[in-house]
Image 1: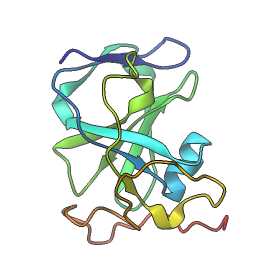
Image 2 (image 1 turned 30 degrees about the horizontal axis):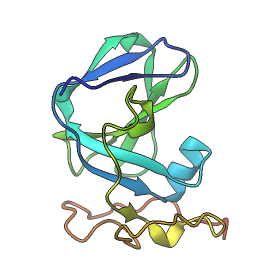
Image 3 (image 1 turned 180 degrees about the horizontal axis):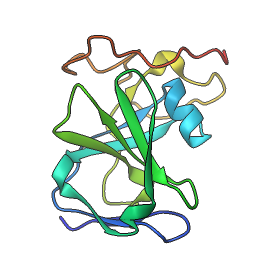
Image 4 (image 1 turned 90 degrees about the horizontal axis):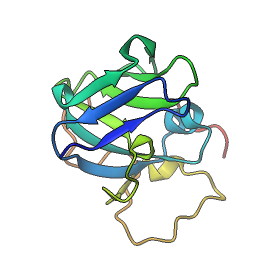
Length: 149
């Protein structure tokens, strides 16, 4: 597909070598804290298909739950990826870091039960209280509780 993206300061750039899939909104507390926003939109590609083309040495990682970690630009803080232990062959990436914001659109909401009360997306996408029912490998995978409600 050849989609490209990067961070706010321009230090880190990447290219996707395949079409993204499973694009959706995540309303979990970890996404809220990572982004400073009510929710994040992620999509998925095979792990090897998200290639850093500039600034790979500036991409840092932090554990974000008992089952995964997140990557970000160490210079400006832009969040890039979420990698989870129960799906090691794929990586989720922050869709808003793409250069072409029309390239893919969300198709569902997850962790709706953690939604910020004043954030009410006006769409008719499927809403799941936690992970989607067909998500595999979920044993022991719970993000921090939403204590903001």
